[in-house]
Amino acid sequence: MSTEQCPLCFSPLEAREVAPCMDCGNDPQELQHFAEGKHTYAECRIFDSLSLVLCNFCQVDFGSYDPTYFGLPASAPIGLECMSFISHVDPPQRTFDKVCLECHRRLSFLQFVSAARELHQSTTPHDQTPRRKLHPLA
Image 1 (cartoon, rainbow, N blue to C red):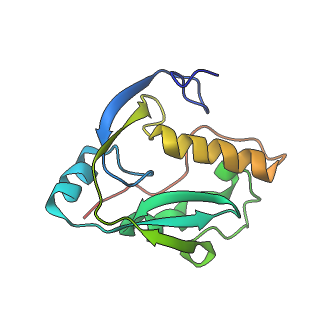
Image 2: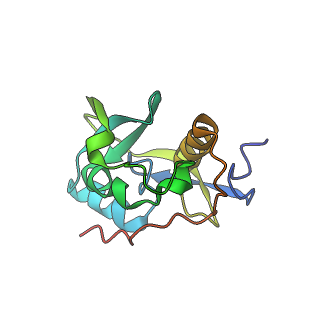
């Protein structure tokens, strides 16, 4: 599959400047918070060998995702208590990544979701939309 397409919904991707958080880093509000130094960033191991760079808000909020989005049973715990700290991202820097115009997620996060689904080999059907609370970034 081309990296010009989303690995989940196959929609086109667009290159954009993003903050370090692989979950919310493409959100314009997160870019503003990054510029203001409101968040810290860390790489966390989630789901055995898979890792993500997350802002401190997304680390705490990660458990609000529906576990089935990652190929797990609905009752599986996925919150902060299930993560292992790898390292701080210091100093954090803006970078460029591709963003799905439909999923509104960075390619790095979408690749993480795809890898998690493959890792878990769940028979649960996967909805393309993450069931998660809105990211207030306040």
